[in-house]
Image 1 (cartoon, one colour):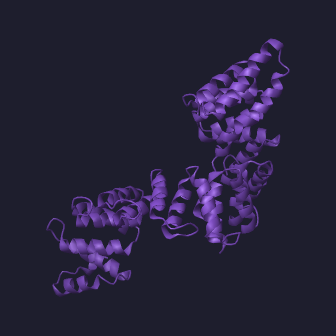
Image 2: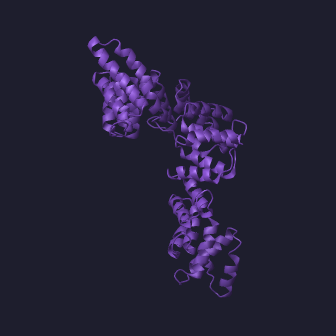
Image 3: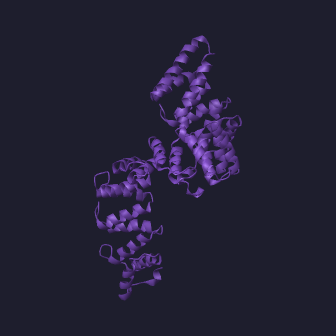
Length: 424
């Protein structure tokens, strides 16, 4: 295997807003707040300490509304760490109605007072243009303020700016250096970004083993996309000996955190018994979870499961319903299946115009089966009206691409004087 065999998902643009940060922010800040409260006047001590304890308990219990209310008590007393937490909860819509402007307001207050968490938060607000006008220059400036003082998330965000060339000249080497600083501090987003750089050779020499090591670090922190990528690494034998059982283990970790790529992969593993005991029911179950999140491959595979009755009750209508979802997302195989269903009235009413629509969509990608099917459709006629010019065009195109079944149609058209060779 080569670096080019790494999964496509490993090449995705890294998000500025780190997913693990949502889980990690509150426990860390709780410790900071507990220390600060000790130095407050005695009359404030018990009120603030109590609020911190209640906020912590509420957050662990996933009572985010109560956690927000308790953090607000501490934030209103002027504590910058609590204010940053309130900003984050507004940003995520966690325990309170989502409000970007309020998030920015709290982050700006602390950032302008020199708080690094606030500066990092304000940077991502400007990066996305949420709660403020999108401004790459200001996003870079606030990230740099945090990064220069050793703030891990600021370092990570700065690396993204260099990687994408936003407000600064694109520089993969500097991006990697900033990510490495943040990764060394244990930031899972940065660890994943470092892992992503190694197989691509961006800012560092290609090294699949190093990529796997950094993906594993992020995965061991519960970072879903990293867990999925570790699974892919085991599945493909990239940077680690191939091990389908371990691939399934890591895909399950990510799947249980609702990562659709992992759910799709785990479903496929169950469908063929690769690293797990074969189970059509489990395959369909995981595909359904991923398909409901818009994963195209799962929508296609779930449709196939319904068409065969594999792990689910057989239903042509349900099969076509899922294929149609995938077809609308541009999946060529799904477009072919939907077109065939319309042409033959399987799972829905026969409709040659709709069949034409979906075969045309697939043919535009250069799919030879779609080209051949279109040619045959036009030869036989839509609603009893043959179109020999279009039939000639698509049959000749399919023939030039090596489709074996079209020659008989071309011979018949030539014999009847219907073949139009000027259509190509």
